[in-house]
Image 1 (cartoon, rainbow, N blue to C red):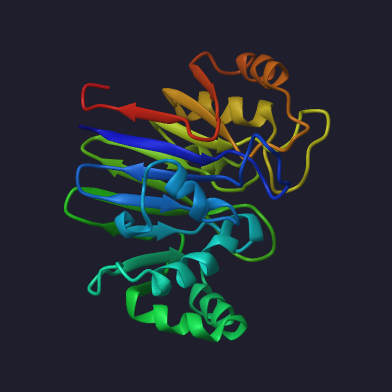
Image 2: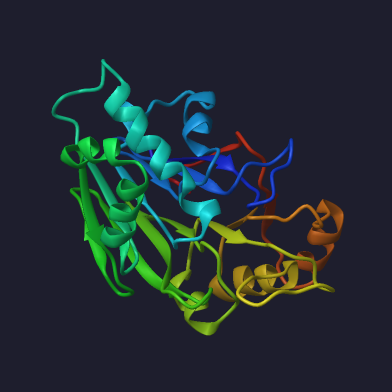
Length: 257
């Protein structure tokens, strides 16, 4: 097996019937990893056939609510689950300030401090490489907001998955995403209505073309995005496979490509 990803959410902070806030599960033979954890994501874990008990690591890209509000839910859920394994340990990773961010959650909900024994909180900086036996996850700097934001690259058995998080297009992103088998790229706003700190379809297409991604998976789409318009804009710059993310979608990459 190579790796498999499940799109738990493909949308933004604006709730819609079709899209939850963006989050992705990344699976290998030995690990189940969650990238970002917005307000609807703990339930999405269960809806998509997973359990919080299965999660090994959680990676947070930045501190905006559509990427973090579900963490408080997870803290509360695990301490109220009578069947939760006593020796289970989550490894939680996030940008500079993640420790203080978690302490503020506990200030709001003091009973959640009981979850501290289950969570190993790690501050991650651009350039860091987190290694396990067969997986390396690298962090890069994203251009999004005033506080530090991250993007992540997972390399497993010669295969690569890149999750941009929220970011503006920039050259360092191109270098970071080089050769991705699946590039999960934010595509927030239409070309005719761009916003700082985010990418448009043309940006996503240019990124995928310049980094040589085999498949471009579009995520973090605001309701103003239209599938046909996005694909037309992207196709002008990128001739690879374009996948418009849908909640519950599963994609696999095997060791033969």
